[in-house]
Image (tube, rainbow, N blue to C red; front, side, top):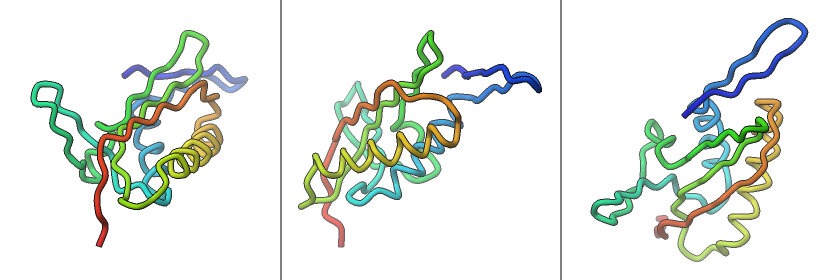
Length: 120
């Protein structure tokens, strides 16, 4: 992951993509219907739920040449909820909060639903 930088009248601000991923993951976990981030093993094809300290492995942050963000979320959703409603809620919350937090514009948010879990 690379960093995004902005020039201001006071100097240069550099935000590491890992910081953006951590914040976006925290915002995503606040959304209704999201159980957690998923880790997909390409070798085995297995999907596992990530603990909160490894949450950034389920989020990929790309910074375009124009300085905009593309966020890819690999999530596990709750059983019985509308996936489209959860995805819309996730997109709205993450777009608003990450843009406010970083000052960078989000070009695209992709959501990959990797699994469904029953919550007790």
